[in-house]
Length: 423
Image 1 (cartoon, rainbow, N blue to C red):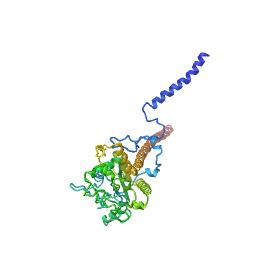
Image 2 (image 1 turned 90 degrees about the vertical axis):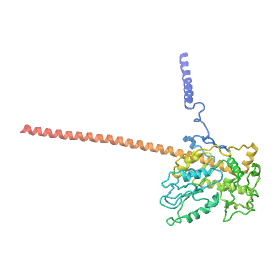
Image 3 (image 1 turned 45 degrees about the horizontal axis):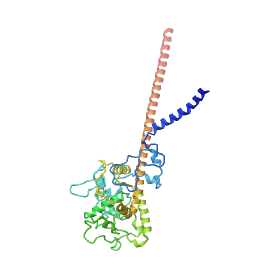
Image 4 (image 1 turned 90 degrees about the horizontal axis):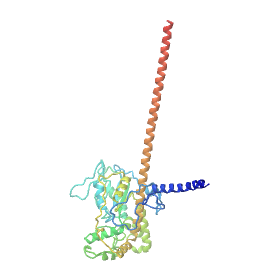
């Protein structure tokens, strides 16, 4: 009885030990492969600082199945454009100040594999980016067409200006209608972008020639008062920069991506501040979501990956992550940072939305690539199997023919032998 009881106790003990050893093998200490819950490998911190290194690409199918905070649809994530560079398609780059747009703009004209590369001549800021076989530009940007719709034109200005400008620039062989305009832009962490703009203005930048056109007219001085009375704002302190209520650096990304016609343009008295902020943010999110492509300054390689995947155009040299920005060299206290976040509350919300959408699109693209690779391998295995089956069938047919020929030859020989005997 004792031996039998010991054997009965030994079975569950060994089972428990086997499960524990198996769990340690599958989920070793420190591993993130066995997390339970809604975890993501992509950093979604609300206020990320300048990024020195990028997070690993999300290569797990499980991460793709996690629900998004903003409940993006498949249409929001699917961003493949059948860009016809030989036809009438145009890429329009909405360049927001201090988001890395100058570097990205140079990539567009100097760093893409093209049948007809852009003609960039020494000493000239603009390049000629014509379609193959046509004297017509496929790119609307600072370094191709110049500031044709105004200095750092926003979404409101571009959407009302670009079609007319392109039709005016077109040659006789280009149709008036039927163009596809694919808008693209870059976004940046709001605090870093704000500090970078302050440093730029402190050095003498003004952007005074910007038009700010909306509903057919620029804003009046009362609608958009100047923050300084001299030629520029050189040497401005951060405190004075933040103190100007009409400073366009505040929530710049949201304003430049929104349809300003929805809020009465620059007329702040047309509705309450709360309603205006609500409409601006909603419009900016909608326009960003519907754009063909947007990238994030903090994630250069993923930005390159998404652009190439979206348009089917490939860069010659890989993007690099620039760490030593002027904003990175600025140290601000907790209270100052909090004040900047308050002044850019809409941009903070927009950037959180953009970061999540960017993350989901990266994951979706990797998910599609894995599916395509699996499909390719299945197709390859199927073809290999068919080839082997065909070879086996051919071998069987050859053996059958040989047997039939041998039988036929044997019959002829026997018939001849019988004839000889008869003779």
